[in-house]
Image (tube, rainbow, N blue to C red; front, side, top):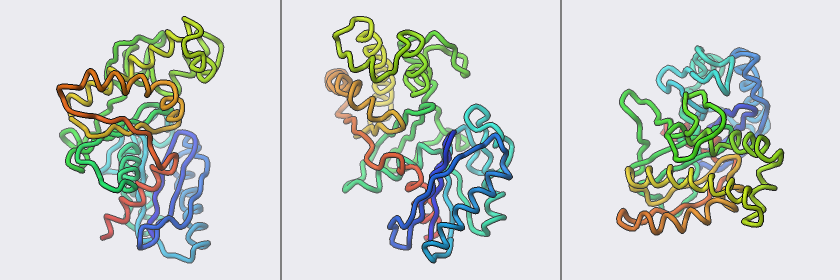
Length: 296
């Protein structure tokens, strides 16, 4: 069996694959990173043990997807903002010792991207996945291979500047970064600050209220700036939109954006925006595929 673990700020999702890459079982359980790494290792080991017992399988390897920044070589998660209590410790080393199998760590956007590509009939050459949830994640694949910066560093696209300001300063030091405008956290925050309302209620106005429509157009502008920059630099065939607020973006933001891109990218080739297909299981599925591939 090959296990994939997707670590989020509030919950973890785990999936088991068999030798034919078929999903056998899934589980979800609280992250509780504030309780520390040792407790997390106990919980992960117990949950995987239960899944293996129920399926009658033996674990061959474990893949982990987690929000960055992180060090994929040492297995250290360097993210005190969304995973306090994990920083400074090697999760892969601790789980390797506990489970006695190879353990791999990867950025969660990369594992989700892999999970999405695996489900396609024809994998694209260049593709990008943007995930919108607590923060904004990004995975870039050029000719099917993960794009990394020198030293194996993952590109943190969530903090690129966009032409829209927020009232609150992001921890990166900017107000006008993509994550501070278009993450689920930011949209919920700004909806409450400006309208004392939910994002859904504001976006459903669809032009009937000028101020609410201005709020929606602000989100369209932020995503347009980010997607346009990424498209011009990397020439992706597709950009996959996923994450916890995927449905919100697909219904209220993406339709405007698709029309704009067709006009703005006419000299750079076609880039299609598509919604993620695997939903919340893309990350753990991709992590399990990573474990499977490592063992082949």
